[in-house]
Length: 413
Length: 165
Image (spheres, each protein chain N blue to C red):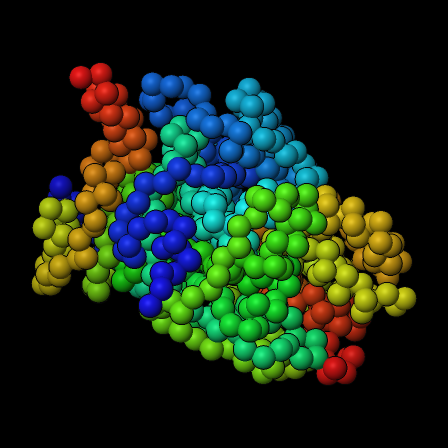
């Protein structure tokens, strides 16, 4: 049996501890503020940030600031980033993971983000994982960190998606299959013909939700799709090394037939509760959110726009592009105009209301549909309820004002 | 080290939003979190935290990477958390911040006095005794140093002395 991708990248036996230099580390306005506080507690001989060229600060969680407290915290971190010559992305640049996926992170790299959804970047064949603020401060101080090399779960994707089922529905399916702790301390490797055929935006969505099973990361092998995607984002060919999937020694293997995946909802304040959208059909909805690090990419906005174009949404609908690049592309291709004409509200690139602190938080007793990755109780509004879905389900439901499967509205194929 | 406290029993899959909600994160004033810890899980819990040993089911601390979840527990006076299993980032954050975190199949009644011996990894109450999964050497070193900041500071100093000798 061959070594898993995690073992290959981290260079240690499963279960062993390895100290590794980090190729890329990033924090956002939330964790960055805490990391800065922790960093000031480190009594290192060299006071500054080690390898500042590898460190990024990206403002996405409350961007722009919503009040004076947030603004002042952001002001301090902004000054620090400039003094230390870190690569700094101010408000409007977009979500940290998305920016890092747009030609910065590369296959085989070790990437650490101070945000749990940093596992998103495993889609590029990097070993990417999330940490907390003190760990990030440690990386700022030393340029490295420790990892326990994870065992891996192989997730075989077979067949092709049908109708209006999307990568998000696949993600909700595997999270349900593994449960909220089924991947704890493990890496998920997405393999098989269905993985090879998965476009990059779908791969990013699938890896994004690995943490919802407790996994350390989700991984796709870097292939021609990865190469083409990175080249489109300005990466030189010689910088992109491809990875060949092998018959690895997985701790566990699960098989998903993509043809059987249908549009799904995660309900009841748990991510592992996927049920067919049709089961909740005709339930009135108060707000639709399309965006976040799970589904705020251009292709997501395009799928949404293709369904609502020329019509009017029946419920308040927020669109949050995941990055400035996504926003620009959607503007130049005319999608943004289509969405405005259909009655949607376009918010600046960033996390939007996903973490429940600004710009679109729900009221008590309201029900929202969101393309995000978490539906924890009260997260997007105290006393509110919201379900997770794909952009196409969000679009079909936006048009009717009630939960609607895109397959029922538009036909299965 | 011997850690002792009264048991506060909570359920499984308790996520970091439940420990401290996102709406309270934008501050560096740690005292604010003390009043709001577990607010969305059970608003009565905050009052029980001082001197407590939390006893939880599986997957405690799942969800966000927010270190404030650990900080809030420590600031509120939690002495240790025992759970069947922990979410990975929460586990690491706890070690980094010096919060004792104990993995064990352990159940007890609310209010019982719990004692944990970190050297033997043994948990005892009035009528039960249970062996916890011992922490790895790496984790123990960080925890004994009082967290990652102190551990790394000492380690780098040692390395520098090694180089100069």
